Image (cartoon, rainbow, N blue to C red; front, side):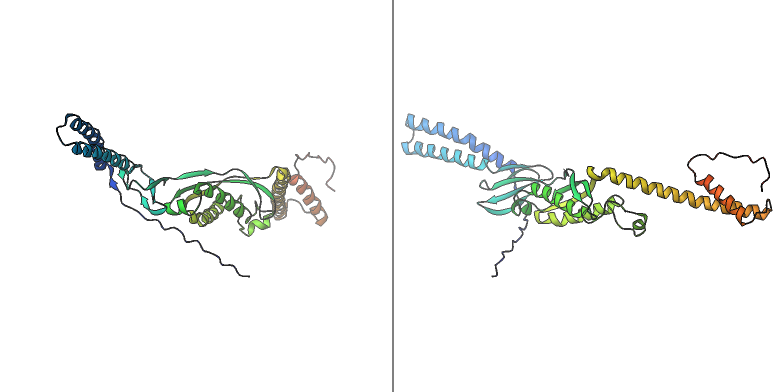
Length: 311
């Protein structure tokens, strides 16, 4: 049974021009002053009988109307600071976004929602996720973002700040699962495979691109996204530390042995070339064994003085 899927149409941002509030402020203040003055004068006309009573009654009605108009006009004032905007809605219909700075005046019946266009920083908490190899790790990030489309931010999502927080966590979990924490052995390092620990810049760029795609629906632009914390989870941290120490010991031993072999080879070549001593293969093997022990040993070699003959 097929179901009809209703696709949501993104809201399109519209910019609306507003009037300067200073002229309207002067007019509103004038109405506030004229209304009580006209009321007092009308009451005086009625009491003194200088004019027909209908004139005084009309004056009272006009003073009340002026006061009501002044109160309604007062609802149209708003102030817009730098890097902020006001989303204007008239009886549920989106009319536009005002971004002109200073004291402004608009239709008093507009609903005015303030929204900041400034850069915001979201410091994510430490998350426990599994990397590409299934190892549990702790990871955190910081996201710098700002509202780029006020209409989408207000009308396409319920709470754009909560949406940013939720999508930032989701994107970080997804990116962390795409890469291994570190190279497991030297063979992996030769493949130039991206890892979380060794390629933080590349991983951060991937995270930024994914966040940009996810947050575009809310009219939010991502200025920067970086990893701020990366570590193995406590339950495997000790085991991974021992593995890293073992890798370091093996690498160091490999370098020592390689250097020792080169030094022994050089010593044998120098002795043979200068005819310092003539040795058969058996004595050369013994000398090589002694030199390798001396060069590869972790402790200092103790010399043995041979008081007899060499043979």
